[in-house]
Structure formats: C-alpha cells, structure tokens
Length: 406
Ligand code: GLV
Ligand code: MN
Ligand code: MN
Image (tube, rainbow, N blue to C red; front, top):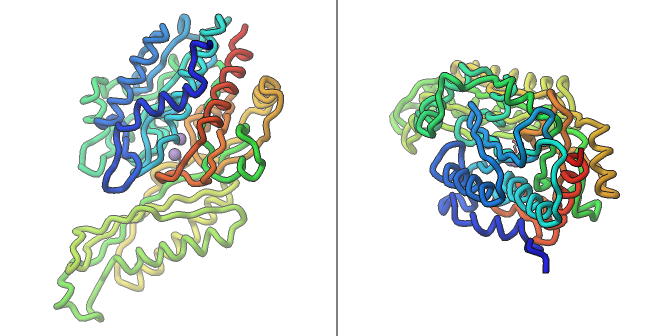
C-alpha cells in the first residue's frame, strides 16, 4: 500500500477546515498575520518539519520550507494561506497543501532533488487586511516599497508595521530582498481555477498563459455630514450620490471595453448611520483588462464620471491608486516543459492575480490550475473535487520531479 493517502490534498485541507471560519459572512476570513493566518502558518511549519524540510521566514514574512540546502537556482512552488473576507477553502490553501502532498509522493518514491527545492507560503496575497494584493511577493521583489507597506492600515487602524512586529518580524527589515529572490531559479504555483475554463474544456488540470492587467483604486468622496430628517433635499452635499454614480459607471465602462472587468465590492461611509447623511464615503474600485491601455481607459472613464457626479453634488473627490500590475504572460518555455512533464494539459488565461504573476517579472514562472466545478471563487461556493485535487498533486509532483531532477 502507498504510504501516501490517495486523497492527501483533501486530507490536509480537512485538517485546517475549522481555522478562520467566518460565521457572519460564511466561508473563511483569514488575513495576513491575523490569528487565523498565524495559526495556519504554524500548522504549515509543523507539516513541513514532519517531512524533514527546513523552515525559515524571510524579512517580509514569506515562509520558505527547504528540501535540501537553500538556493541559488532553486525550484520553488507554493501559494498563500490567507483569504478574501468570506472566501472559499481552496484559493491559496490548495496550492500549499498540494506542495506538501507532492513532496510526500516524491519522498515515497525515493526521489532526491538534484537542485534546491522549496515550498513557499506568501504573506497577505489577497490584500484582505491591508488592501494591497500579493504584498509578500511585492515586498520581496521591490514592487511595493517598504515605506508604502509599513504605513498601510487595516480596518481597525493597525499599521502593517505594527502587524509584522506583533508577528515577530522586524519592521526596519521589511522591503526588497534581492538575496532571498535570487535563490528562486524557477517558480511554479498550483491554484484552484477561479472561472469556468476547465469545466468548459472538460479537463481536471490546465496550465496558465496570462493574467489580466489589474489594479485597485480608492475614491474618497467628501460632502457634508448632516441630519437625515432635518436637511431638505435641496440643501445636501451627500457623498453617497457620486459614490453610487461611480458604481453604475464601473458597470458601463467595463462593459464597453473588450475583455475588461470593473468591480466595486467595498464601500465605507463615514460615520455610517441610518439617519445620518454621510460626511465622506470611501469606494474601492477593482479594474482589470487584457492590457494596460484598456485597463487605464476603463479607470479614466469611471474617474471622469465620478468627478462629474462629485461636482454635481458639491462634493470633493480624491483618487488614490493603491496597487497596479500590468498584464502577465507566463514564460512560454517553462510552460512547454510543464506540459511535457504532464503529457498533455490545456492552456488557459486567468482574470485572477497571483504571487506567481509578481514573480514572473523576475524569474520564469508557471501555474497549474485545478478544475473548480462551481466556477465560483472568492466565495464559499468555490470548490474542487477530491479526485481533481489529487490529479493536481500528481501533476505538481511530476513537474517538480522533472524540473528539480538536475
Ligand atoms: C486575487 O485573487 C485577485 O485576483 O484579486
Ligand atoms: Mn484570490
Ligand atoms: Mn490565490
């Protein structure tokens, strides 16, 4: 009998199923360096230890579990353990548990890597706590400067500097880490698919071709806080009005640009009382498109509409770009090697962002997707069947075996 359970990824996911559940939203709320994510990081560290891997945490809070001596020119695989608010069980954790299960498979067959091999867990990939996605890989690569990151605040007002300090990291050492980055020769991330591509192709596993250009913008509308009953309709400067116009414009602008998407999923009025005209409203826009020009054009149209609506209501508007990343085209040669290791696998693009996309600007990077039968992600309905998860583990093991052989 194989020493590795045939549904190893599912068993590992089951082991963490109670960590960070969110009874109010449903699903999971696990955010960078919060109690749930810290518990998962400890769990991963223990699991890596059981497999004889040497665990270290880099200056930016990313975890590395080394099979053999650390880099250079290492083959690295991994993903993240944090989630969006009320997210699913698979986005992030599937890649992490699959990396552990792939090591199990390789160790069971007596494989010895011919080059350094590491499993990684990236910090705050979703930006669910501090707003900037892929913060761990952005800091590692220098895509986000340390001073910007350290001053980011979570919804409770805690800074990233305070959060990393509480997690045992040194805020003065946060930032670009060329030495750590130089150890990665090639990077492969396994991830649950976040759309319907593999359902439509009737395939359990696929390989990624590209990621949409995407970014996040904060629109702050400022008006005049006042009494809901005592303020006549003609005497108001209500920032909710231009905020609503922005939301409508996002649908209109993205629908008129080929392949574009624009979303408002978060809106915070201050002070937020039912009988209070808000004094200000923060609206976050997530916009994506196949290239930089189209993405910028969508955001410009939305911004123009929001400015006009703010003027019409006598409100002020400030717009802040909180993150941006251009289109990612994954390394074609590495993709061919990955497909060769698998025998065959369909290739497909994705609209979702990933740490692999940040690393792709620095090292050859590839992604494996596992079919999601609901086609839904960033929601509790996100799913992957145990057999498909296992196909993912086997695929990742084949890829690691081939790429780390010498
Ligand atoms: C992360 O999954 C994103 O695409 O926002
Ligand atoms: Mn995600
Ligand atoms: Mn993810």
